Length: 127
Image (cartoon, rainbow, N blue to C red):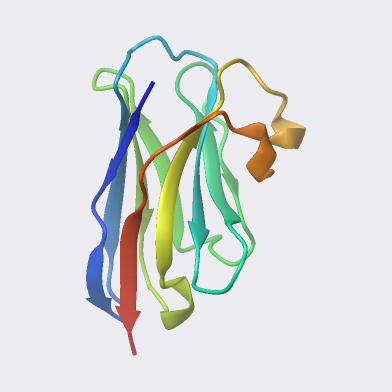
């Protein structure tokens, strides 16, 4: 299974971007899907998570809560990350990730929970 992430780019502080993530196969249901990011020299960190189908949970890192929104399009089998009020600290490579099976919500913030990873898309916020 491959995950295709897109939508990154260069934006000024205060601007917006929308990232998209789509799987190569349509067999995901209650699996979790998340966005992580990694800035140079730092560890990969959790940004937001939801599920491909079922109860539309939304988890966010404290640093993005109120500015980022994760959503999904069941018909297109795609997940989006709408990023508003972007800050220079948001500059990173953003990765889409999915679990292979259902995983409890308590584990969805952990990098090790996810089985499939996209190639990453660069987001650069200029101040």
